[in-house]
Image (cartoon, rainbow, N blue to C red; front, side, top):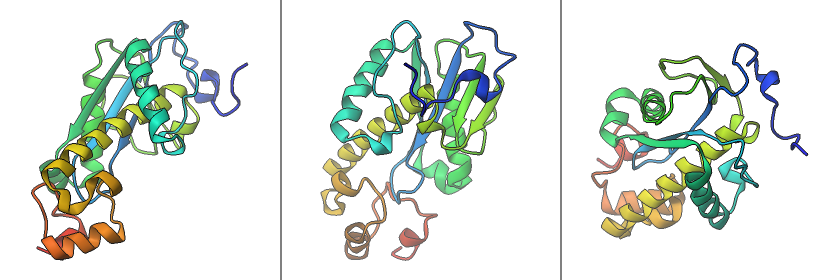
Length: 205
């Protein structure tokens, strides 16, 4: 039985997309943190290889996200992960950098989708039809899959960042402005992967 949490294709105004057409879901991770890149993912799921348990990555446990990450990579028709760097975030602003990462993720798909569904209310510049879906990560399975890929990939980047700069505790807060992270910023200053355009970082420079 289809979960009621996920919208049917016809509810998303996909009437002009022929049956069997390729539908890509897109989501990002890392808009709010004070450090590290913003990561976006694009996923085209395979109807013949369904994946159980897809949902908004934020409501899943880290272990479940890791399990689903491997399943998505193995069973999806194709998927792509891309990022926008700290330098691009500071130059463009976080919104434009996020849209750039999404554009790169879609461009990186091995198969060209007939339509792209993007989580949120803003769309990147794409070469194919696209629609923004507010809270799409909890409504559309392909977007849920993209949210999981982006979240797990970025969390792994934060673990690498922690190995380079353990004094900030990136393994715990993943770059978000927690009290512990803000205290570490005040004590140690900013590292090269901190976003200079974000106010808490600017204040310690």
